[in-house]
Image 1 (tube, one colour):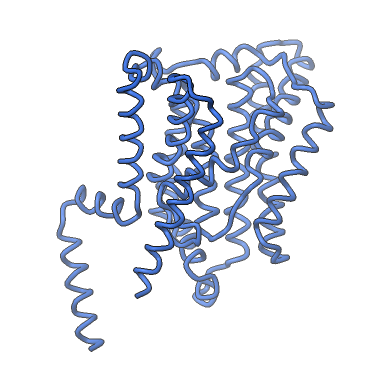
Image 2: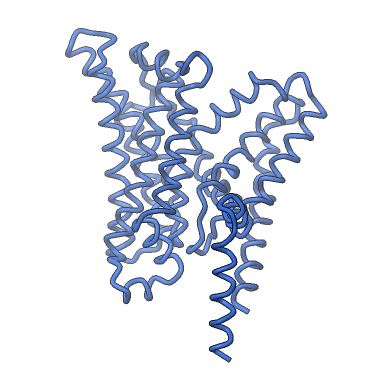
Length: 350
């Protein structure tokens, strides 16, 4: 019986390898549950288009949607790696805020020290400071989770409050302003060839790099292996603890980048403006087909998942529905996605 099963598997694999690359790619997307959420996004978009065609289905509006989704996408790429290990990072929103505060503080201080309100050196140092701040919080999360075995939910819930609290202590509860226009206009409002917003372009680059990291490197392979079976990964020689620290550091690093982009876009820190990022990133990742139980992940699905809450919020605003319904709709779809994931896991285990 085992010989027959092995023959069948070899035959199936050979058949799969013989398919054209685009067909294999689409089949992989389907197997990861990304196609159905793409269809959901298309249906939602069509509904809003039918209801308000002159307001919703415009280049201007879709550009705004893409800009709104860019920061969430950067956070969600990091969250994808975390959830792929069967972990979770509730601190991304607060780490974004903390990183934006550190970045803004360094930028403002350096422009004053250099006596140059548009100093590119100050902007670069602000970016580096924001990235390091996010990286540090990611390292704290990773070390506590990997070495102390405290559940990720508890660790990142604790660091959520700590990061936000330190942000308020540093600023006195007031948003920092007075950033260089080269940052706020050049990066936050700038466009490549006058068409593609830099914020969107950076998010696309991060998504592509994240996909390559997940699907073509040992780092991605180890991430999925740990999520599938941590003990088996350890016995196979994967440095599980060290790798978990790196995964959470990646999530923190991307939160730091999102914090820098936030001050570039809004021309100030936004201490109270990122309370929903935690739910938003988790919803986007799970909706996109990444398993909440680990071992299965797709950056392509995450990209699609990010647009669900963004399109809902935009569409509700256009048709005059209270935006609070967005949370209701996203929550319902999230529950459906987890239910689908559970059914899929059960069918594979049979």
